[in-house]
Image (cartoon, rainbow, N blue to C red; front, side, top):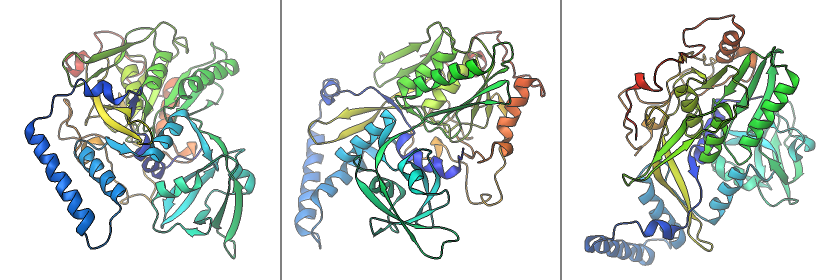
Length: 451
């Protein structure tokens, strides 16, 4: 299991959001305020400028690109997470939320302008073709990668199932570049990985919230309980580190898997009466076993919903460092035909105690820092929602900001946060925050107002 800080940067661009169900644009238009004459005057100015650029710029510009950039400029001036998705980007997001796509089966990052293979996924076309961890992809179908962004390179490697692709690979120890031909296949993203730590603790690594996440959590808990008897099982570690978020409904479902009652999350939109609450239903799948939730600066949005719900209800002890602090919800609005979709921030979400964590993040009950390796010291910085340009200022936001370092060591033996959690569950270590204090009203100490 390899999980590094670079993986966060790959995922954050596409997944760090709580996405709600798709709505048609007309539903929003009926609620919008009518535009005034000044607005139409400004639109006339835009049209005039566009026409002058189109006809008089020194080189002929791509008109479609001009319009797309103008739209994104407007949306990005609102907040970092609203954007326009063209048809290709819209389809790509749909694939990601489904948890499967046509591709090769490799986890990658960028290194020295080349795509570096972090690990090939078992039993996928890439692993069967002989791609190895550490390989550097220099060309895709004969085209140099240098100059492309990681996302652009990933899009080139993805494609229709059963179509071929040739990768030119630089491998340490090889005297010349290797050319590997691969046929794309359906790649299923495993958003939930699990194992039994020792023989007495269930470990669930949830790395994203796709349509397959809740079934994955349910299956993981069942398999763990099949392996370890209830009298021997000490509890569960729910690892949400480097989890950039995903579908809001899946975050609610995962929270519900550990809760029997109470509010999980509420969302509040622009209108005062635009408040929605989501409550837990009876049926704690873990049968009340202790739960420790791991978070860090890479835990964002939907993962913060889960951590906040379990923390506020004293169902789990949160351990690690402050989370990213993305407390906004994006709605995907189809624009019809081949026009793609609008990803628009339409609400903020609140934990059961009534706290907005936008720009603030979830503070762990037990703060445990994960040391950075020497090669990363001084090269990475702790970042969160509050440091993003045009970020919405949250109600609880202060000068301390949100986020922390987002790093998980590749080898669990070096994982200080995981070790501490296991020691707590096994009684080797003691801490006043574990097990959680069940007395008092949820969220009283936070001083948050209910919405």
